[in-house]
Image 1 (cartoon, rainbow, N blue to C red):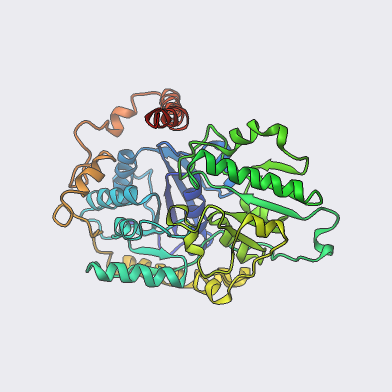
Image 2 (image 1 turned 45 degrees about the vertical axis):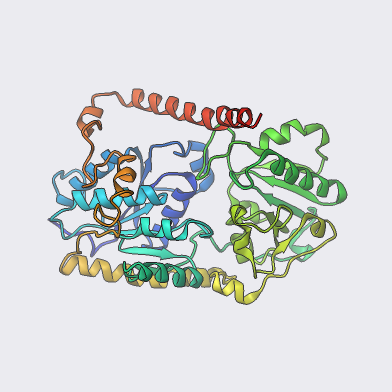
Length: 456
């Protein structure tokens, strides 16, 4: 079978949400510059819409929506050369939630049995890792490269893998691919005639309760009322009909609509690419969004809110020691937090595009070594830590959720690619949109009602 590694690598990215697609596609271009990226969007509740994909701004040479079983079948045909119309990939980036990544690793291990020149498999995290560290890491074990976005993560990842006897050799230093951009200049010459702009970057699932979300919305509007010379922007992640990496049961848009009579003239809502929003931001406020790292990388004053406490469920505990923790009261009084330089360095915040680019040097070098090994002698089979022997009460259920049995083979009741091809493409898309809409309606409207009834 011809090998494509001496030329520009062919890279595939499998993603299951808009944020993960952005991370996966941009990471692929960072670690394999000038490569042709083929994107796969895994069908599910968070499959991004066309608007979300356009907002992300990460383009692919080709983009296909697919289910897990069909994706695995296609990767098997590509790697074995069974279908000459489907050339093999050199690199596969799994930009998915941990459980999906683990299922794909087992499924790929099955379809690549006996294939030595399989693609190099890369995975990692979209942003800061502030919860489920061991669970998420062990679900990603088995990839050739597990990317760690900072020196802090490198230490934690290797300690976790070594601590369970899995070996931390796959952990590779890296950086978040969307860091960088125009460095903030606080001078009036840079800002021109526009007013100081305060951006409150909200999150789909943090905080959870209606009361807490309504409180944060009111405080943002109160800041606008207190400072009429400023412009306060509520930066939204998605529209109510869309889903992101996390489920948003109480969209801020709906809360803002109910409070429209109380909204000051200098308060507005905005969508759009976060990088473009940061181009005109003078102060970023958030509970715990990864946008804080993007803001800090540009030297934009950044406040991580303490109003609701510094608590693990909020994720703002991750910023302890950063120097960025602040309350709306302090922001109202004019506080501009000063970040701690040692904390920034440990988080991989280098404050410069050139330094951000160099953050991928280790990953590019490691990938080049893997590709050379693949070319000369082939790569060993994928070997995840979780197996039916090490996790017999966990792994089979996880694989079954993705249509696979404990051996990574499709379950008997799963539709085959050939059977699915019997349905016309338009009908399949309509069915998927209908199912996705029903799920979103249930998550955003029915589930909250049921919880409220349960509290009566």
